[in-house]
Amino acid sequence: MRKRVAFILLALCNVWLCRAVDFRAVGPSQVPANQPFQIQYIVDDKGDDIQPPSMPGFELLAGPFTSTSSSFSFINGKRTSTYQKTFTYTYLVSKPGTYTIGAATINVGGKKYRSNGLKISVVREEEEPNSRPASAREERQERARQQERPQEASIFIRTILSKTHVHEQEPLTLSYKLYFIGADNVQLAGVTKMPDFTGFLKQENDAEQPSAHVETYNGRQYNVATIYKIQLYPQHSGEITITPAQFEVVYTIPGAGQDPFGQLYGYQTHKTLKAPAVTVHVDGLPQENKPKQFSGGVGHFTMTPTISGTEVSANEPITLRLDITGNGNMKLLKTPEVNWPEGFDVYDPKVNNSYQNTDNGMTGTKSIEYLAIPREPGEYTLPPVTLSYYDSETGGYRTLSTPSYTLRIKRAQKNADGGQVSDYSQEDIKQLATDIRYIHTDEIQPAADGTAKPSSIRTGSAGWWACYLVPLLIALCVLIGMRKYIRENADLTRVRYRKANKVARKRLKSAKQLLTAGQPTAFYEEIERAAVSYLSDRLTIPTAELTKDTISELLRSRNVPEELIQETQALLSEAEFARYAPSAEQDMQTLYERTEQLINHLEEQKL
Image 1 (spheres, rainbow, N blue to C red):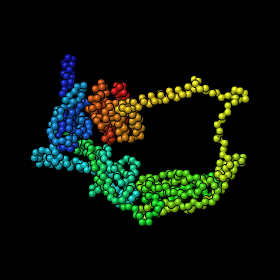
Image 2: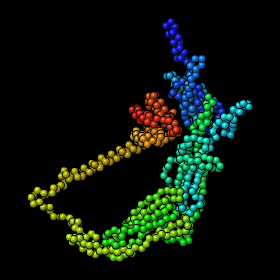
Image 3: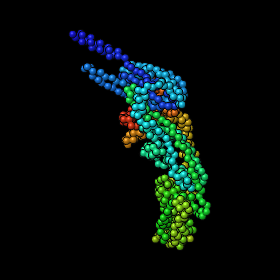
Image 4: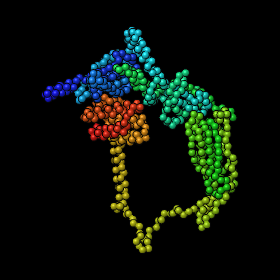
């Protein structure tokens, strides 16, 4: 009986060990050019270390995204289970033709398995893939699926001006707004092209995290986010055109595909969006009634003067403060000129700006402090200080003015000890301080006790030569050190190689701060930059040419262990996925520790 049970158990083990692993590739047979599509690799066991084939002409947009599914059932007392793991890649092909894709490999239980190959026909965008006549049942099923799928994704950028008709130097705000519907996880990936804003003086706005809101445009509701905003100040009259801008966005199209079980899923893609050009009509400032002291200001301002005192003693400072408040091109306002009376020592004014950017220009206060010191007693008149600007609210010039001040300067008093008074007028100064001494030419006499006679260095003595040779030797050492430093830093590639670890540590420190602050998107970007910049510097290859295949080849050529190479690939993939899909659950602390350990292990390899 025992032999029979052992035989049955042994047979079951052999059946389990010999069970074939199903690893297959699934993809469309025909796709249009320049349209994203997906290829899936499905394995019915717990596999990892998937290696997709080389695919020239295919641009990898996203992936691999991993998903698993499992099911259990009891039929006639028997328990059955299924398990599948799917690796999804999103590609794009721009050149029409027929492409043959080789087999992928995967590691399952220490053994490698190969998938089937695929043949994909890429047709032009205007062509439709071949189709056969559909039956009435299939048409009903297709209509039902279309009703279940979300609306078609629509995403574009508008260029919006706060004003299209302004005067010279009158501020206006340019905004680029992203409109989208039928797309999830929309993120700005980068700026491809920005206008040069010729004819404008620009003021960058403080960077803000874009936040979406709902807005109706052309009778349709969109999610809207302002992705870029800048203030512009036109410098000449006429029509000024702002050229188009281009942005890269990454987003997810929900329900864009269907898996083998009939479930809809989405895929991530990217798109280049073009913001249209706009034209601004700029009127010149009127020359009629233009004040001679026009400051160049355009907007609406008020001026409040404050003087420290009108009755002071000679050599006591007088401070005149002007607070200019309002909104407009405050940064371009000229500092008003103060005509101090003769006999005053005048100092450069001190300017303190406290304003913020708004759609109507800069709003706040510009404070100017003028300092002057009267040197002679008497009665003086400080004439009014004026500020002329163009009022954009009333459409005319305005001049702001301070009152005229009468300054009474009293004579300064001498010191009680009768010594020199530093604040006396020049007519009263009889003798300067005795801080300038003549050179003593007589022989230096010893002190009274004969012990304080200064030492002297004779010409030709050791001390005399040391005074010449020691500075010369120091200069030579400094020169040699500088030449060595210049020679070592001439090779920028070598400098980046040496500083790779230091730069990576600095980025990891920044990522740690973002982790503590709870900013997942910025954290994943910093983690990815730390790993990629480190590999770029250590492998001496530009970041733009750095791909996962290139990294693997270079690491293998430098005898890096295979498990360390696989860990590098896995970490880069996870960081990239987490960066473009921040809604996915990721253990940020674990990812940070893995990145730090990976850099430490690569440092030990002495690349």
